[in-house]
Length: 141
Image (cartoon, rainbow, N blue to C red):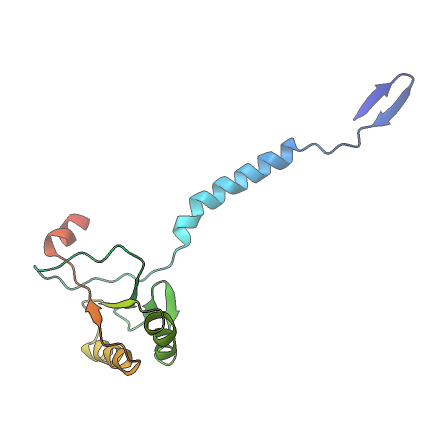
């Protein structure tokens, strides 16, 4: 990029920011599209019952999820049976939050009872169990 300065030729020492801005905009679009896909969760088929109330919409609750293979997640984070009491003490009991248990229909009964025992052992007496309304379930499919 030579420019003329009278009789002398020189180079432009300024940075061209247009390609930089183009690349950054493309990266921004890529991250905006892929960010919702990066959330991890468990595919859980909830038991169905006629009398189901909606989950509270406030952020004063946590959900313990057990999938059909027995894998547990506290909200979006995987936890083991050994780590669960510490997490429950720190995140639920100390912060005075409500805990809900969401277990797959096909999970072994023993896994649910074991999780409930761990919850009770952590000193949490108020536990909500999540289910799904059959009408809502058929509308989702």
